[in-house]
Length: 375
Picture 1: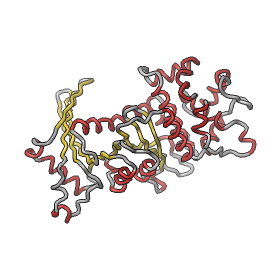
Picture 2: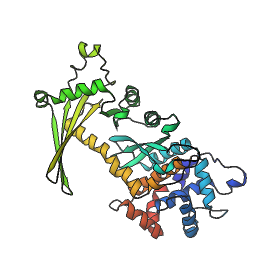
Picture 3: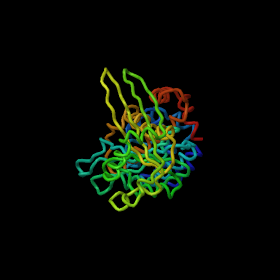
Picture 4: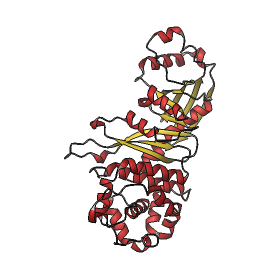
């Protein structure tokens, strides 16, 4: 466990006195192992450790025995989530999961984390997701009812990431000049969704792509998907000539462009299901002069965060029903789930996350094949 220990060695132990009788890194190691093997909350961590004590003694000292449920709960409630998230980044870097390509930024609310007694709103987290490897490379939590916002949380997260050569994708809420400039300053490029939160620019871009003569001359790419009785055709158009946006008439109005803007894009999705057809159009701004094929691939990579991260966390880790709500517990346990998910994604490709968790819980040998990445 030397690699895991090195990654998390700088996390300060928030406990005092006799509460520190169990080594912090051993507590975190047990919790992560238990999460990989199917445990969902602190009571599960304690039960799993008690049932698999012989397994844990293969690589942990456990000088004072197995930690109790209260110990796990206390650690995750008191642990500094910022320090824990920083060490998460070091762990991911050592695991080699970031890869190159698209980094998707997206927010998700942990529905069970509201604290009625303390009058605290639910915790939400903004996640940085490496689409090429389907792994999480960072997280920043916030509570909207306490003066925080997804925009500020995303900027705090981006500030911690090395974006060199990466294309950062995000929804329209992040289509902000300050966010775009931060991405550029950190060596990356952006591909941001455009909606009515920038009304003047959105109306202008929609009008531009509505012109049949213009669209017929633009580079285009198309893909078709068919499954479960549903056929979806996606057609992407990109425009690299932005001189008409930067003319004196445009500059004189309230049309404010993002810094470094290099191209505009539109994706028209035509969906046919049970004989009915619907058409939707999505618009994007990018600082990278993307081809139509690259634009379509990057946009689809961003959409994959729903199926490859949020859906997996809800269906395999039961995140939406997680009821831990005290102090820093919700945010730290969200980080722990993503650590476990990264390890599961990395090991034993070809087996679903659900099967990997079940088999790790049933078999010490299978669990070792997952945990071997932590050596």
